[in-house]
Image 1 (tube, helix red, strand yellow):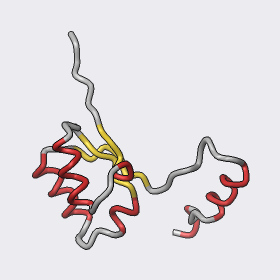
Image 2 (spheres, rainbow, N blue to C red; image 1 turned 120 degrees about the horizontal axis):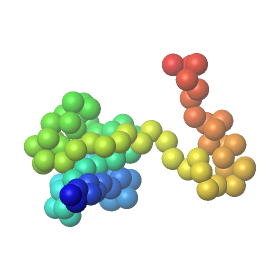
Image 3 (spheres, one colour; image 1 turned 90 degrees about the vertical axis):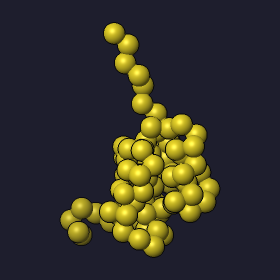
Image 4 (cartoon, rainbow, N blue to C red; image 1 turned 30 degrees about the horizontal axis):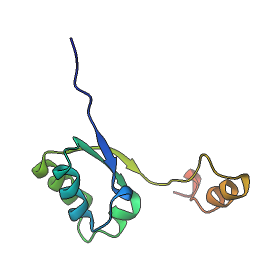
Length: 91
């Protein structure tokens, strides 16, 4: 039996506001979304509002992407990224 493959795209891959991005993701036929932290931080409403928007559009939230650029970078770039990321012990 074949199962369908679910597709998603990261909001960081698309321009616009978060609501515009989510509508574009749905219009493009994706099943879900990976929400980049900055999109959530600069969104004026709450994370619960984002959940409702996704539910209304019929797309799933598959992933929250709090940081990026930790793999495939130079050792210097990695060291910079690690030093600028809050540690778990500081939360």
